[in-house]
Structures are given as structure tokens and as C-alpha cells.
Length: 56
Image (cartoon, rainbow, N blue to C red):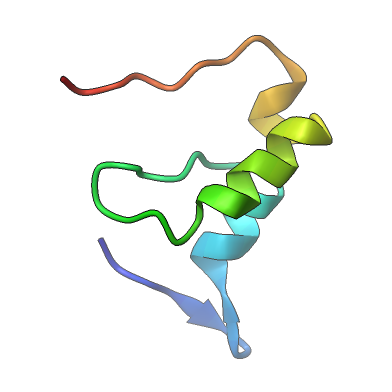
């Protein structure tokens, strides 16, 4: 996983927070809280019944 910054802000965090991406739980938990916020406020992907695939 790469962490990208634009103007000092984490692009990864921004995308997950806005609901434009899901956090990758298989590599890190650092974005999980932002995904929870996006889900709770029904942003982006979370406006529908979207459920990310889970690798076993």
C-alpha cells in the first residue's frame, strides 16, 4: 500500500472519508475510523448497499 499526499493532506484518508474508497483492512487499520464515518453519514459508496469483498 502506498500513502499519497496532496498539499500536505493524505489522499488515501480523504478518499475513504468521502466514501470514494473503502479502507483496506488486510494491510492496515489506520483508515478504518474514516470508513466508519463515511458509512454512518452515507457518503459516496455508502449511499447504496455496497459491501466490499472480503478476502479469506
